[in-house]
Image (cartoon, rainbow, N blue to C red; front, side, top):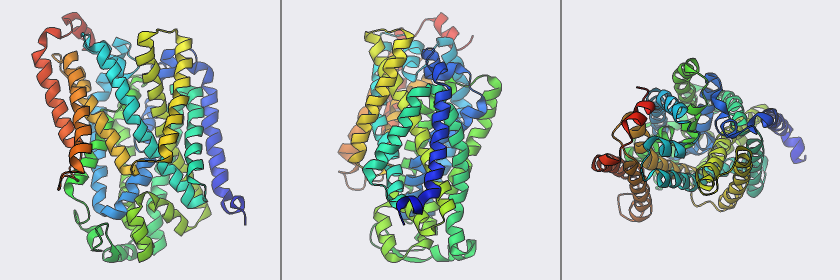
Length: 506
């Protein structure tokens, strides 16, 4: 039987899903083209429930549903604690940052995170900080997008037999198309649809190993003492169900912090606050976003450990070394056309929701925060240049993804470390510390990013015993200390009192 005949339910579901995405983008094409506020932040007019689902679906991408879920195959159920940390940071993001960031950006007329740094700090280093933060976005997002595309391409290859390169081109091309057409309107509303799909898929995926094994008892009996070998070559035994047996607590903490802190530092998440329509919408999102995320993480973060109940020793040996392929293998082994169709479509939705968000962010950074500082353009030209920048950047990501430098988990966590160490002190200080200065923001970014790179490439994999000490831990500490110390030393460059009164709503 041909591939079309074998996989027609999956292909049909994918076709319907893609048609909906394109339809949403096309529906908002004229509104998105009206101006920068429309294309960049949807005129701050999107209902809270849409933004809530969009935030959840943007953060919990294919990296979560494929990469992190698969990592549990090597790390056991202990990996679920990473999800607990992520949910905590989601709560912090919406309770401490969301309302203040929206209110301040309205008053400052900010439409991007880099221009927030510029408008908020108003110092001799405001413009350099804006450019530095935009360049950071362009650098860190490369690895994040590559991780998403890699995960989706492996899924298509494992389940449908689609060649890896074609899968990469498909996920990036389809997402780029509706993003450049619909702008932030299209991104947020498609993200909301994708969020609903992702919740459903998380529940379905979590049920598959139990159904395959014949129930909860039989599955846990299988995984409580398995003969499969761990990544170190020793028998796993009861390691899947014993906390810290297969993965160090330090590594759990590192991945939990580096990825979880993206919600309090990464532009693709923070810019969601810009678009909420009113206080009632913000209250809804503050309550429900952590719930949406928490439910999905409960279902997927330990999934890989459960898949041990579906494999033999030879298959386990392969998957231990290739955890990005675990979810695809699970679907292929379960071999139910309707379930596969639902899951593949939902996993594609997870990838596209995050890709669309970061594509928009890199376009706004390249044009609104770099090009327009040297060659100011009118609103129509800015939108056109932003669309062109998104297309060009997507082409670069495609080339990197064809030859990925690492697995999904490491690509994602490295990107998160860059953002958390580089941006969080400046964001938190801008929202809460009147005495924070632009000099503090600038030097904290440099210190955070320099420490991230130095630890990653000079210490972590070169010094014995440091492999599980993720770069986010030293980099965040250095960045925060730099912000506080430099801000205190450059008190003369604090913004005027009248400006601070406007920022803080006095």
